[in-house]
Length: 294
Image (cartoon, rainbow, N blue to C red; front, side, top):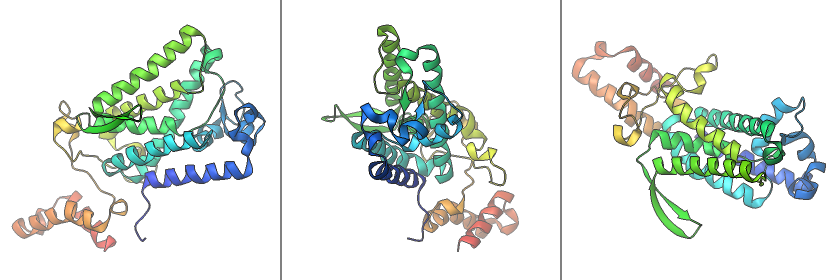
């Protein structure tokens, strides 16, 4: 109970609590015909057909709202499985920041398509799916050769590399967008938001991971370097060996046992062999963090 909550657990809990409040306070928001009359529909959902001064707030509030139990269940499963697999590689704060920014980028994609093709893409939007697709984009680009099991049509188990999951998700989103444009009919799924979240995840790995992640833009928070826990082939760093730098770990985001075994023990071995004067500045900082944690 003394360990801090993981980022994906915080996000999942907020989504569940907000949905319970929707059910209790604003049941109209779960009824599609009456959605626009609801409090959620008028103030908190992102309506790409009626952009107002509330847009800056709605870019974030829509990410924690859902249209029904099934909608929440699907996004909740994505947060649980993908977020739990991703967080050990990038940390709690990065997971939360990634979710929020992926949701914003996905919303902007949806708004852009709605501006050009209003009949197909304009309308109210709620849900965590853009953030979940952002998670998938990062995980698949960090570990493209890691294999996962999926239930095709929720029945047939198949094993796929994350590389193919990424490109499959990209193809489905793109095909759905082109089909909507061609047939001039839309559906209730925000395919453009999914595409935006997925592409932002790929951008995050390509441009931000090697430079300290999202937190490098927040004053007062130390930059974090990431390193894969697998081989270069498994991590997707085959052509970017300079990316595989030592990770500076935030001791508040890992439990004591992992922190000591992964970071402190090698330094203690080095001291016993070469003396304390051989430590680098980074290694001295890790020892200071270990002392504060203990």
